[in-house]
Image (cartoon, one colour):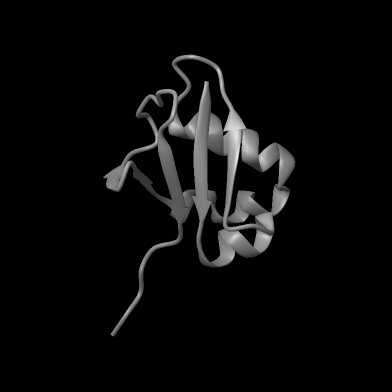
Length: 81
């Protein structure tokens, strides 16, 4: 299965691109994808606990399963004031 990933802010800086497509196993979760990314980009580890996800333009939790063709956005918490 293929999933399209979009990166924002510090995540984009670490990965070095705005988006990429990755191959994942069937029944993979968002957290599975994050573990795979951390193996490839160790700098993401320090952001892991505060990372937010949007799956197909809706906020998502790490335990949600992905389907072929899904779009997963990975970004830090939004701050403002």
